[in-house]
Image (cartoon, rainbow, N blue to C red; front, side):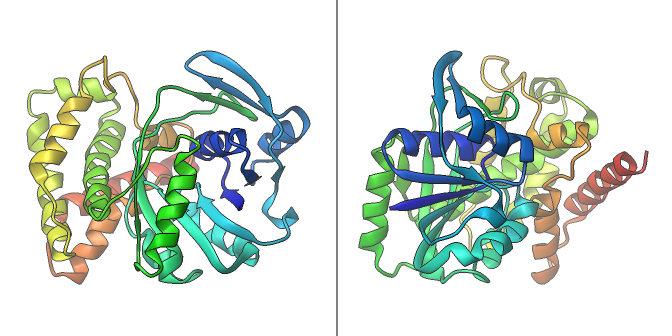
Length: 310
């Protein structure tokens, strides 16, 4: 089985390392030149829970350098980079190539359907975390799990066999009919914590220490719940509120600055169009007002604009 990671950033590197260590045929594709060069020349340096596990020479290329066909493709880019990456690697797909997408945010299935049959799309959500300690260096902590669902359940037995094989490498994948609900629940959390921490300029604990944080949280989640239900998703807003609250303590995720905050701080474009921006877009389709998500999306884009025009 030939496995391609279209994007070898933090999570792509972590999952790719796990599969490569389990003797799977893994290839990385990435556009970060220094990252590609360091892995090619020195191997991927793997540090898990502060333990240096050595260097792993996983084949790593720029997208235009790869040839052949792949059986499984993990897309591991930022949400806004998905279509551009698919354009670069679509020549590597065959008729039965499976694409696994566990990107943050909403709306990815519609993009994937432009490149692959619905029955070959596996959409999911993950609570694995990871990081890079520089180009060519994986620096990660803890463990996690993945929830996955085949978009169109044809030949499901083959998918379940694939899940079992990936789990042999420790990916902790659960095939679940509730995956879409989980995706929306995670998106709801991100629509609150990623955006408010960025706009307020604080970490998660500081957001939680504000005595009216629940009013801010519900202003966003009320819109997400309404839009999600119009989309046919059984959203439980209490679960999302609880998940957010559980992030506040310093011993859990309180000291963390969310990824959107980090992207903004480092002058990168953010995933806002796949979070609150997607809620705004879907709200218009269903004639559901989403004034809070509308304004948050505009505010994040205005900060991006200022960053890029300093």
